[in-house]
Length: 223
Image (cartoon, rainbow, N blue to C red; front, side, top):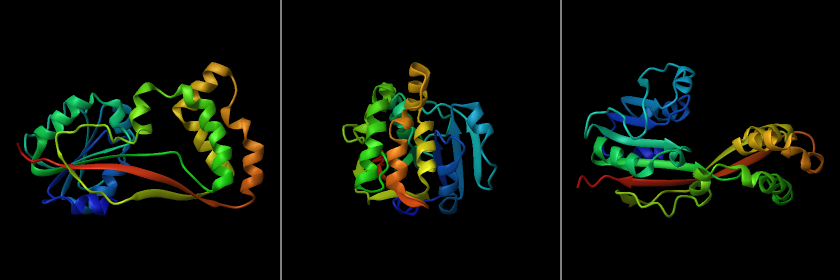
C-alpha cells in the first residue's frame, strides 16, 4: 500500500505523516521519501516513537502543523482522521501540499477469519457497539461521504493480515477503546460472552486474520 501511495506522488522530497502515533506509518514511508516529518498532538506518543534516519518527529496538531506552505509532496493519516477537525485539517493539508501533491488517509474495518469465527466475533462487536465514541461513525461509514478539496484518485484494494491464535484475537478485541469503556461501565469483559465458542471454532494453532482497508487518495490541484 505504501508503495502504491508513493507512486501517486510526482516528487518524493518530503512527506508529512499526521497523527503518527509511535511512527509506524512514517517508518513504512521512509524508503520512498528523502525526508518525513511525523507529528502527533500527543507528547506521550511522540516520546514512544523510535528514532529513525530520515524521519523528524514532533508534537503538533493536525490543524496547525507549522510546516512551510507548498512544501510537502505527500500527507498521510492512518486510522486517525475521525479525531480531527476535518475541515480545518483539509485546509491545512491544502496549504502545505505542493501543487500536484497528494493526501492519503485510510482506516480499517472489523477483522475477519472465516464465516463461523466471524459470526462469533459479531457477538462482541454488537456487545460493545454503544461504547464507541461518536467520532468513529465516519470509520464505520468508510469515508465515502467526506467532501475533500482535492481531486479523488482511484485506489487499489488493500488489507492487513497476520497469523494469530484465538487468545491473540481476544486480547486484541479487549484493547478496543469501546471494550475498555464497556468494562468500566459493566465491570465485566465483553470478550467472555463468546470466548469458549470462539476457541472451539478456532482449534489449536494459528489462523490468518484479515482487516480490509478503506483508503481515500486526493491530489491537490493547486487552485
